[in-house]
Length: 159
Image (tube, rainbow, N blue to C red; front, top):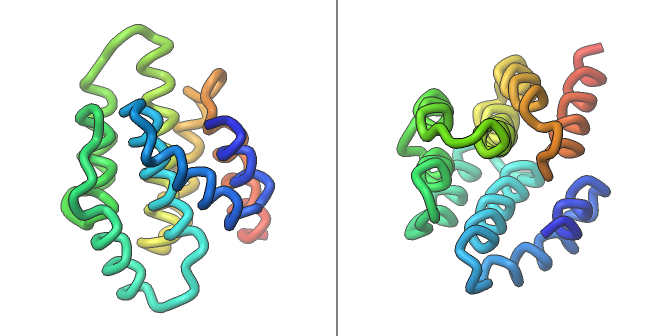
């Protein structure tokens, strides 16, 4: 998984897509779910067509995907256009757990909801806020470099 995430950070989207595609068929439910979310995120980030077409593509891609926990399911539902960012983040917070588990969950949810806001909703301010909140929790998270990179790109575009 870290190698596939690194490919995203390096902008090697085609290689990342292939790597996540392999992981998505893994027997490890957590890894498979994460890879499926990453494929949705890559689709959103690299889309070249119209916004309405992107929403339709994401809904098709997310159809039938089942998360291994409620947060992942809500993230799939978000990309399918069935729930709001707030509903995803509320569930991520409500699930609780140890401080490390909660922080990792909030970083992951913040990253994927940030991608949604940035590339699907085209709301850079909302995306930046989600990324900033996620970064607070991402000290040991696999998403940390991706969140930092996304924030840097948004800040550079704002200048």
